[in-house]
Image 1 (cartoon, rainbow, N blue to C red):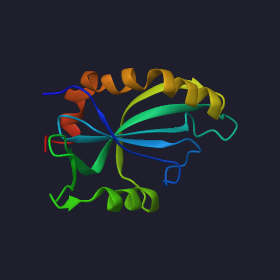
Image 2: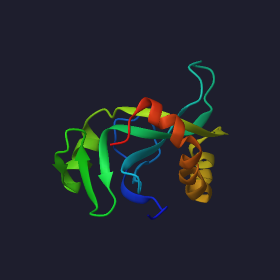
Image 3: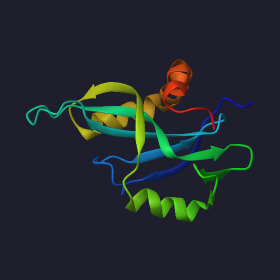
Image 4: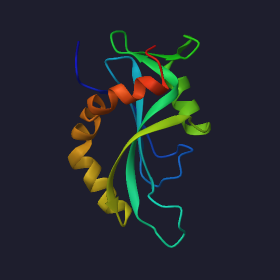
Length: 136
């Protein structure tokens, strides 16, 4: 079994409240992960941001065949998925947070340098994920 993630889609126009791209990754264990930024506090005066690595709650990914499925095991084409990702609010379960950034440039630089380590950290939270979402 491969341990590498596969970038499925990267978009600047999703319903996530971020000015930075949102990345959707397929994992070898069938899960789909989403990486996005958000404000680290609900305090309006605090504008620091953090990267969030989250489990997608509506889709799974077949790593062997490169196919996206809904939870009802209906196959979704990549074009359809891209449209849904850009127009509908996504249901995700945050797994891990990274960094404390004061602007979008800092956040993007961090992601560019640390994306692999961020995705590799999934192994550390895999046991925690299964209590929220059973293996598909």
